[in-house]
Picture (tube, rainbow, N blue to C red):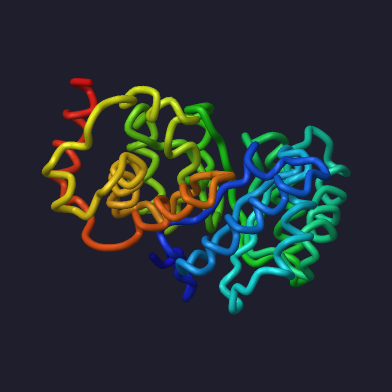
Length: 270
C-alpha cells in the first residue's frame, strides 16, 4: 500500500518490537529474534517499528539487522516519547545510533506527548536528512479527540493507532486520515494477545478459507488490512513460526465489506 502523497509503498504486514525484542544477553533468545527477522524479510517484509520505550529493542535491531539479508527493504520506524523539549533531539540521536542508521524512515511523537516541540524537532531532522516521514502515534484507544484535531491542523505523513476486532473505536480516525492524505499504521492488531485468548479452542470458521485464512492470526490481520485507509499493521512476535503466519496474512485475497462484517459478527458470538 502506498503512503499517501509519496512514492513509497509498504507491505501491508509489518513488524512491531514491543516486548518481543526487549531481551538481555541471552544467546538462545537472540538467535530466535534473528530467525524472526530472517523470516520477516524472506517473506517480503519491510516496516519494523520500535521505540525508546521498548527497553533493548532498538539496540538488538541494530545488532541483528546487519547480519540479516533484507535487500534494502528495511523501513525503520521509531518514536519520540518525552515531556521535555531538549530530550527529543537526544532520543532521536540515540535511536539513530542504536539502529546503526544514518537516517530513519519514520519517527512519530508517541501519545502526543509534548507534540509541538517534537514535531518541530522532527521537521528540522527531516530538513537535515535524518528523517524521511513524521507523524504521531497513540495506543489503547487513547486521546482520539486530540488525534482528530492534529490530523486536521498539522501536516503529517503517518498516524499509528490501535485498531482491531476487539477495539474498532478508531474507525472514524482512519477515515479522517484517508481524507487528509495520512498513512495509517495499526498497532496492537491482536489486542495485546487477548484476541487469541478469546478464540482459544475454537475452530476457524470454514468460510474463512475463502479469503485465504488458515489460522486466527491471519483472520485478525486480514480484517485490519482490508480497511482501505490502513497502510500496514505491525504485529509483534518472538516466535519464528508465528512470523510465518503473520506474513501469510499479506497474501491472497482480502475480505470485502460484507465479509468484514461477517468476521466481526462471528467473533462477537464467541
